[in-house]
Image (cartoon, rainbow, N blue to C red; front, side, top):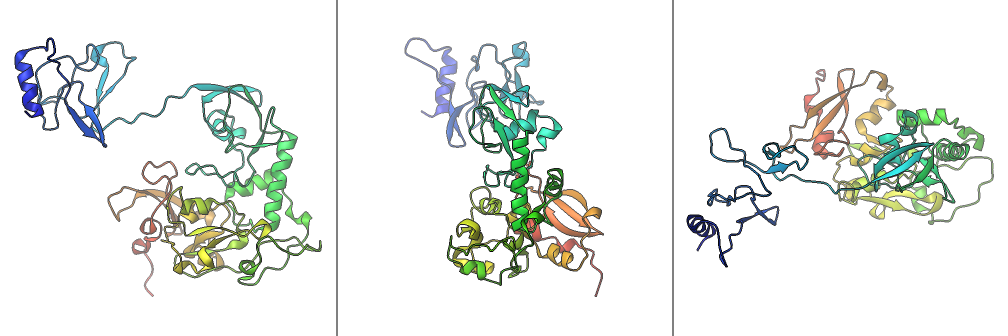
Length: 407
């Protein structure tokens, strides 16, 4: 006997007695068996006889035409009465996050409460003052897992032997955190100075430029930069072995720009090895694994497999590495050519949000426009569809909408 027939027979006989036990019909949602506890409706839409729903006093909300409830039900256990305990949702199963207890953390003497498992940086962003929320970061991004590479976001944690990276250190109940001590500021300034002495930071983001000014960064005190490497020299070096500096010049990663495709360039003179591009190409977004870290020590670099040209690698030209790069080491060809021609005007740039029209996924696009021309396309890091990442069409497929003058 089918489930609907068995349900109708049970309904006609009344409540089950003795060994005759009524069970709620089940159906599958996302691979897991589920039962409509409110109405007992089966996948075919047939409804067995009346009976109590899930929880005492639960009542189904009827559709306007009286056809019965539609969609899943969200139950509010804190509502004042049964009539107000249900909300009919039309969007599908309600996904609930894990319930986490709150822990108390002291941020520069001010006690705040944050969910257990939050990082110190999340606590600073969520509950800290504007100055605390402005903790400098280079390898961290809101749409990526903590990388813990640059060490510019360090803070003092009472009882810790060394400074802790706030992007990765988890909050603990009773933790005492200090974010603006002399030790913290000195460490952040040294990190920014060493990075700026070895890499060209002139095209880093506005936030990075501001942080360098706020912390009094002076990379020039390490001496003038050494001459740039010739093309391919850094790739040919034996990993981890380099000659001792003579003290006249500051060692650096300056080298020719790599332009081997029509979409973006790799200017590794600006690379600080933050690993964000590697993670965006890997497990944080694209799962293409076209690039990875190679070499050791000061000779560490971002490289393709066997150092092949980008068109010969596994790259799919999504440009997600560009979207997360904080220093301008990776940029679109359009931006690179405009900068080289002196036609780059960031002060005049406007950003307009729209929806990508190439497919039905619904990715949000941020169109960066300078003087009537789209120069770059990004996506909001907090967008529920893209989480800041795009495909090749969304990021680079905008030329057909440009109002270019006829040649």
